[in-house]
Image (cartoon, rainbow, N blue to C red):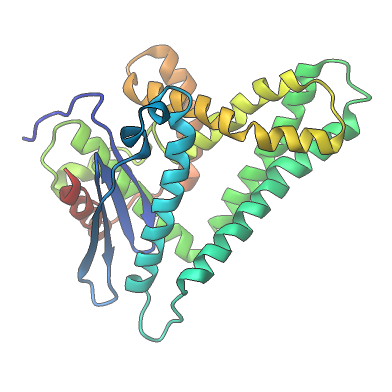
Length: 289
């Protein structure tokens, strides 16, 4: 039996192509299964900016910093997994291709989740008096498009496998947090849905944005888009603190209620993994703890 970690001792990661990236403290490890079934690792040390610069570790600031760091680390891990997981016959993406794809994806996300809802808001604001109701309706449009996007990814075989690795990552983190020895048999029994997941974080962002954007009043379309982009770091900071709180206090009834929508959403973004995928997640976790 392993030792149960302190609640402040947090580990987590993300699924990549045929593998899992895990992060704990200053250590990051990505484990990827090659086409010949061998597991290959990439390990590195990274001291978070919040630990290097005290001001960046302040509450509500650290969330934005952590978000950008995870995006950077995630891209690096994704590039490594693409190099390892794809067979010799498959075209392997170059580094610049992945970065360009990320920029295009980010721009697309801003268009669909910022620009389109803002346009919807400006079209109906003259017909609805309640500012809160306006923002709720706008939030429903944003959430609806997000759910449609996630559901569409289930049609892609590669994404379904990524979601299985995502489930393996969550199971492994749960087992470690519970002080269990990291074996496939122990890890298998845990849930694929974790309250500190990035999927839950995105949902928190969408809910908190409704409250924050309600403070903007009724600006015209261009100003609303600009304000929403400028407020992204603020919303990310608040959402980060909310997700940390729910992750550390899962036994509280209020926290369970607040966490339920995010956990329900993970029915889409996680799938039950097979034993080989769990083995990959365990291998990554053992490299960082």
